[in-house]
Structures are given as structure tokens and as C-alpha cells.
Image (cartoon, rainbow, N blue to C red; front, side, top):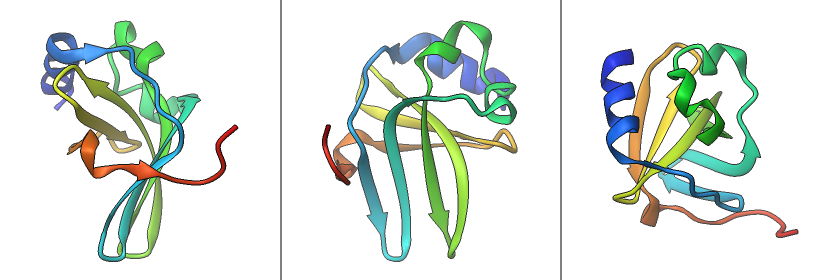
Length: 102
């Protein structure tokens, strides 16, 4: 999984930030922020050269909240990485503004 993530990030990463945004699917949701990712458990699964491009977020699945970090590829896909090393993708278009804007 680490090699797949590294390859995806290497091929398609771009340094794009976002204000707080949310994607929902029923009761499940993913919130992304423009705060830097500082979660050491997650960053341990991200190749060194991509760690600065990762931002903080969280996902709620089946009522359980999981910390995650994310980045966006040049093709508009958001890559989310979780503490257990699992990764997932959603199109950036699935996210809508969320929370106060500063």
C-alpha cells in the first residue's frame, strides 16, 4: 500500500490547499481542512517528500470518527490517508464548503 500511495502522490501531487470542506454520503462524512497534518501515525505512512503537502482532516464512518490527512492530485482527486496506513480517494467536486471562513 505504501508503494501505491507513493506512486500516486509522485505522479499526481500538487500543492493545493482548501478551506474547510465536507463530503457526505448518507451518515458518513469526510471533512478536510487547510491545517497542516501533524499526526505522526499518519505521516509515518507518507513518503518524506510528500509530508509537507498533507493537510489535516477527519472521517466519520458508521458513527466512528477517524483522523486522517489528505492531499489533492492534479486530476482533482483527494487522497486521504488514515492512521492504519489505509488510503482512499474522492473527487474534489464531492466536497462543499463547511464551517466558518476566516
